[in-house]
Image 1 (cartoon, rainbow, N blue to C red):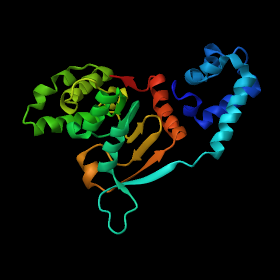
Image 2: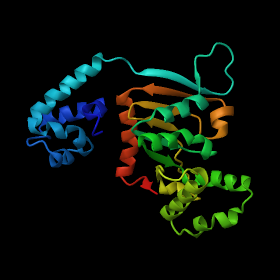
Image 3: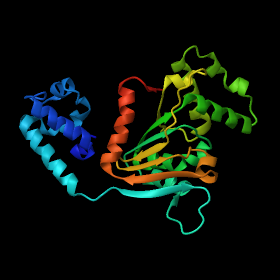
Image 4: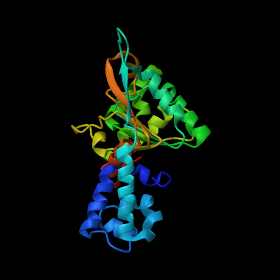
Length: 273
């Protein structure tokens, strides 16, 4: 958010901040401490250049930004599809869209996925963007489902799951188990070496008896381009199933989705591997 300034702040956050200023919840001096106390700590990087303006100056800037957004072009939406597509097509295929999105990244990529396989093929264009452009990646995974996919990968490679999974089975609690699974993910599904994505997970999904799943499937590229889809990041989801999704070109929407994930990280619901 630092480089994007107020363009990366959601309309909901701008309206909430304007209301807080009107109520007197945000008072001079406007600074990091003031914003943290009012529940707007996540807006500090975007607002820091405007701290010297005071509350009413910040409110005036918010009014200008909101007015500009009301007149800007509407978000651009594209239907994304996997599976049979008879007749005149109004969609783009998932297996084409995903590597295109990865290839266009120049700053940051957020990925959330329930099921993942064939990582060497799936993430090749993403790793190239990381190498060529210094792109950073945050990846959110479901530990239980990822474990099953790793089990299949080991089987396909003709190796022993009993031996490969020893560090996972030795883990005594959910976070340790999740981190052991992610370590195996790096080994089997991210064969490129460094740079690597930062992986986050919900510890509850590492509990074999839990009913909780991280089931979302989405991608955000450079805080602007979003893919939300029913398709898992698997060969079936990308090429064979019938799946529907949408790409959304809109900074406000992308910022809202990223903030949802960061809220879970900030609250400790999701942890870093």
